[in-house]
Image 1 (cartoon, rainbow, N blue to C red):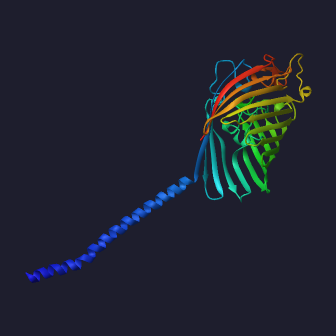
Image 2: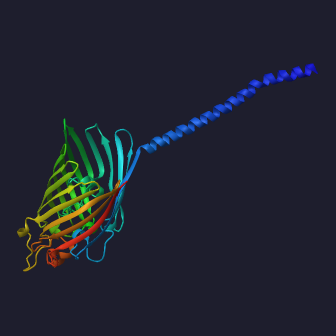
Image 3: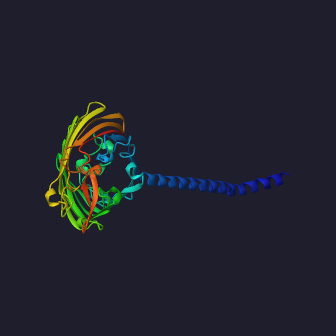
Length: 398
């Protein structure tokens, strides 16, 4: 019996290292699996951290006193789609220098069709210089970068007299953003080069318009409470069905200024458009002011637009006036209520008149006649000489 017990003990001792080794290996395998899972989760987390997603929306309600068509409003009940918009923007940091940006927008006035407003790659050479390529915002105005982000400005909508003259807001091409920092100010240069297309549904004349050889420069100077801006852009138009608008050269000049001390904000812009041929040369301007008092910001804005070469675009038919002759003055007044963080409600009343026997560039005053050898020509019907627009908008950023 003693010999048998000793034999069993020796066998157990000899077998123990093998059992322990198997247990250790199992534990090691589990640890390696856990480490792999953590590394995978870390990679996914790092990948997700490279994404940035934000967006904005406006829900608008408005009505006009008649069918003149100012800001696309009419007198056929309250319109809930004209100013309504939803946009989502996402950017992905490929690495420390390269990023990709996509902004998808859907607008009520365009039957909620989803469109890519921005789609570009950017490369940051250093802290002062960035180059971007793809579909970009055309930097014509002071508000161009956030033109449709209603939450970013106090009034219901940017001046129609200034911002509504040119039907294009984006281009496909390249731009460079270069910033020169001074002790207490900064100077930004933004040259661009590319082309753009306006769909017939978005054109005032109902024609698809191609803008070729679009190039120019915008510069902005920021100094404490003051911002100054100047811009120049050049393009050539291509409208095949209408020979009198085809292959014309256009130039845009813009000046702007904004003073903002936290309580008061005063902002204004002046633009000039010069186009060869029958398309009008146009001057336009606005000045707006707002005062911030707690959650409320009452505002007023005065705008004006006028074509400068009416005598050079006469229609050879007695009593018929070109609809491209434009003169219009507009006053807007309202109040912005910052109801909660990231949400503002705006109440606006706009009055437009002073058309001076022109169409005022309003759809309700524009008809069309065919002139032999020329084709369809827009003419002024003179049906409306003023209009009131009442609107309420809710602006959100997220």
